[in-house]
Image (tube, rainbow, N blue to C red; front, top):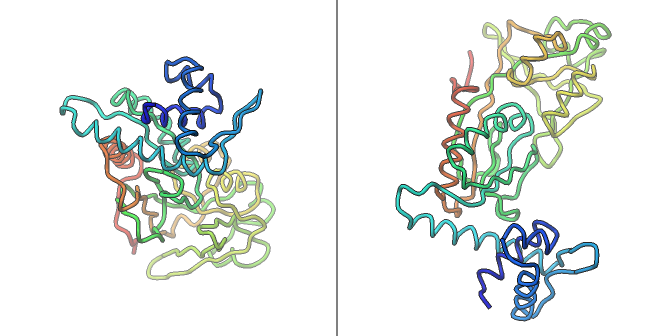
Length: 308
């Protein structure tokens, strides 16, 4: 048994959920893929997959083994790539996780350019604002806004998001236009809360004007942990929201959102690419990070952290 081919076949079956689809992507026969997985199970003396006539499910042992296998396959691919001559383009599978709005509005529209540069890199992109266990979930890197709370990660600051305070016209007609940020902490006003961590806490926002500084906590009827959901809640008139300007721009132009407190300023939100300290920065990860830096320089260039 070729252990490398067997592990590769097993991983592809898990990812596609089918021996037939796995065989097609590996350019092998279904029989060969089946035999490789069976030989792997015999060698390991565990059942990796539950097979029925309709679908294939990974067992608990199989799921644990899969997480180790994909890391091993990635390391082998990186080793081969590092030994290739410099003219060979980076290749292989790259697992990343990025915030939903950033993916929808900036990263994904620019992906054709990335693919044209690096056609042999396969991106598996998770789209979320949740906390990601990079090692446990075998994620190569995450792109996140805000100060990183996990100090064990290696982080590279790639940009800053300029923020503003916005509300829908329907909300302002109902609650009135607030004259001061502190008005958002009392009736009839509400904010759309954003939960930054696993504890589900909604943190206050600091705002500045001519030496005056206020921290706005606000009351809410809804809090979310996803930027797209927060924007939708604001557009529905559920409250005032703090948004990166790039997310609000088209909605302001169309009249769906109104910017508030234009004479007040907020600290920009830093953007980071983060990865585990024990994760080898492969050629494919390095070019992805460099590409993100390019995009952020165009859309969200870095500024001074504190606006006075």
